[in-house]
Amino acid sequence: MLPSPNLGDKRVMSHASSPPPPVLRFAPSPTGLLHVGNARTALYNALFARQWGGTFILRYDDTDTARSSDTFAEAIAEDVAWLGLAPDRVEHQSRRLGRYDEAVARLKALGRLYPAYETEEELEAKRQSRRRRGLPPVYDRAALKLDAAARPALEAEGRRPHWRFRLDGRQVVWDDMVRGRQGVDTATLSDPVLVREDGSYLYTLTSVVDDIDMSVTHVVRGEDHVTNTGVQIEIIEALSGWVPRFGHHNLLVLPSGEGLSKRLGHLSLRALREEGEESLAVAALAVLTGTSLAVEPVASLEALVARIDFAKISRAPARFDPAELSALTAATLLHLPFEAVANRLAGFGVGGGEGFWLAVRGNLARLAEAADWWGVVEGPLSPVVAPDDAAFLAQAAALLPEGAWDSDVYARWIAALKPASGRAGRALFHPLRLALTGRESGPEMKTLLPLIGRERASARLRGEPG
View 1 (cartoon, helix red, strand yellow):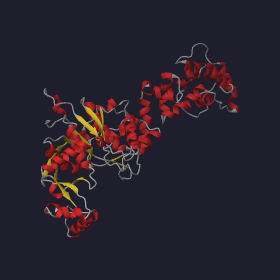
View 2 (tube, one colour; view 1 turned 135 degrees about the vertical axis):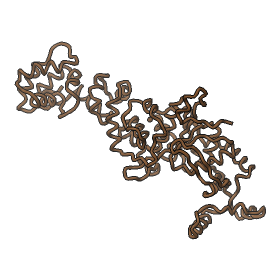
View 3 (cartoon, rainbow, N blue to C red; view 1 turned 60 degrees about the vertical axis):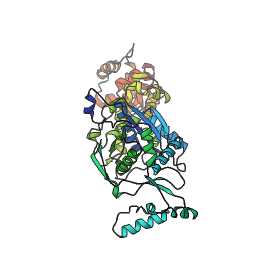
View 4 (cartoon, helix red, strand yellow; view 1 turned 60 degrees about the horizontal axis):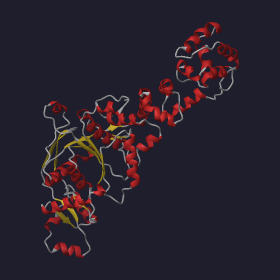
């Protein structure tokens, strides 16, 4: 039996006898595409595990065979990898049915799991009746009053039982890593169904069994699971006697305040990836939004690992703004070293090495735009030459420096061209940019000119494609 771990309070880690490394899990259902709210949960779990040298498990909650699909499971794996998260273990609940059978048998033997025969229509009628009387719509435990003869009679009618876990009906209290001391009075809740009529298992059971078997020390998830936690603690205690630590973070919502939905496809990671958003920008915004920490670009996930602190998460819903994400993507590109993008640039057909990347990264809203600037550098490009500027540009071509074109070639060229032409300011610089790049604005010419090279620059200044 595992001890109750205390990780999450960083002060504990300074003690000589530290607890074992944490084990955390992200358990999505492969019933749709992940959205940024799911990414928030995945990142909190994975980065906290990395922060303390622990284990991160990707666990597919795929026992709902009617809605789960391999296609969505593959999409989840792609999204998790795109975020830069490498699970230490991958598990599938659909492959663990034998363990759930054993847990059900044990709960039945303990008298904690009992059969109930009401149809959904009958249960809804009971709920409506209680509401009319001003009572909470809690299951009345009528199934517990059935005698030995009643059950066979119901089954003879063709009814099949669903199985409910008998709650203790007490105040279940835990120290939440995000929300502090929390309590749920299970006397106010319906006994949860753990096994459906068709014999399939619900998440409430499978999640608990998996957490026990996989020695999960910390369960970090959205605050919409707070009530579930009271129920799950009772099931955990019935099956094993030890309880992991829980943390329930606030939820991401749209700027309108509407909640995110896999079913409706809100801000899916696949869509954001296809739109060219940077995974690091998505990660930074998903992790830092709704906390007391500033939302800033990061150059690596390690920079986020160091900032994970559940005590700094707000209790209010956190608004995730796609416009803010786009701005953060551009800021992230500005901070990325060449090594972080080299392979992706090559995939876009971009060369030029680190010098080109440093020249253009500050002018990119999306990484794919680097290919446009590579086209400007490599050509061929049709220069923009106004008739009134033709003579000036010919003069500029004649004054192009000879010899090696290093980082100060542009400064040397302008130093010669300015007094010779008598031009200054926009009249000097704007015609040069238009002729050399065909663009009104862009990266600094002092960084582009050495990349364009003398031959192409000379041709463009003379009005020839180059």
